[in-house]
View (cartoon, rainbow, N blue to C red):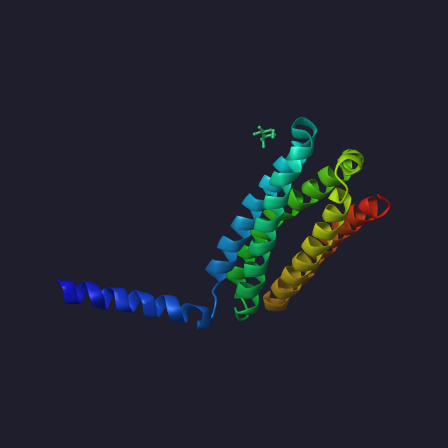
Length: 184
Ligand SMILES: *[C@@H]1O[C@H](CO)[C@@H](O)[C@H](O)[C@H]1NC(C)=O
């Protein structure tokens, strides 16, 4: 009994050890996008709570941004580690991206709406505007890496749709970055 348990433990730790080297799968990308949907929704909730929470609401905003950035990095790693998607996986993943797209756009719009409030916070605690500017740039860059990786492995027939979604999301980021660029 003891020996079997040890073997199972050994096997489990070997799997855990070797898994970063294994090719990633479409299923992993799907679960990554589901996480991004959850993370972005949480970030949007924190943004919209800024008016109620006041300056302490920046804490949750920071935590949500860190979580989202980490999960975006994982998504990029999983996507670059996955080979060309077949039509079925490609369509499933595109469907999830189409779910994520409006959530990202709404979050960016809400961030823009809260720009005057962030400027007020910055008068009390210098650096809040700079923090938002920096995190926006980081999010835009990681999101773009994820888009590029996804378009790369998308089936040819889905690439135009995927590229169009990427352009729309990038434009949303540009608008938000511009809104904060004039802030002091
Ligand atoms: C909004 O902020 C307040 C004050 O920090 C907090 O108690 C509340 O849980 C927040 N609500 C949401 C939905 O995050």
